[in-house]
Image (cartoon, rainbow, N blue to C red; front, top):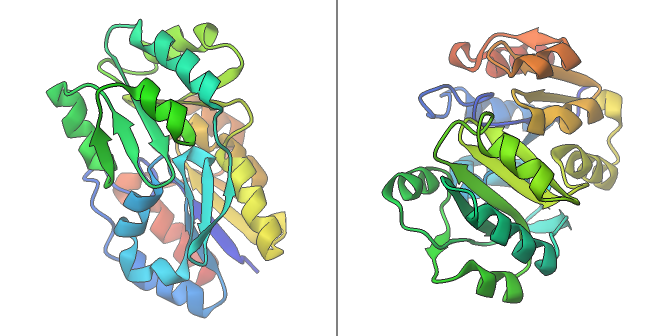
Length: 262
């Protein structure tokens, strides 16, 4: 029996319109009644995810910040913060690259220091709790940061995703979307967070299914006994995982969950 289903959101569960599929909440209700826990697993912040899933927030767990934290039963049960010294070092490097805009992501709020309109518009689509500050260094010194999200004014796979990894040694720089990157401690990922949740709940690998579309989902898919990628997924991930379902535009995740559970 499948007892837990984890799914990435943007590019996976969510169609290109970014509007939640209408079957999602009724399906989560049915899953809960059958003893299967649904877990949105995203690079988004916890406040945004709890707002997005408000109608069923008492029936889910949440993996936020690309594995930076796990929320279940009204509390954070696991977190993987990035040390302040590493955040400060990474910020200096990111600021030195034209077209990159950093966001320091903490458990309850995200902070940014540049008001470039395109960046701010994109930021507010994914964050429900964010604050413009004069200097992110001050935030890093006083808050516990889970990661640095970086918005790229160019395609991240061709720009920031190429430039940053060799410059920010000792940290993990991962492409998390078309125009987003995440910088965090090297071991932080959705798979580590999923394992922490499964251990907390006593769920075995073979009792877990997971869905993803990009390389930041790889560890989560590998931690699951039943991994699936959407048809629109990043080609290297599709080669690694193999099990392909219809694209996010064709609501492949919803269809497959119904097949697995109902």
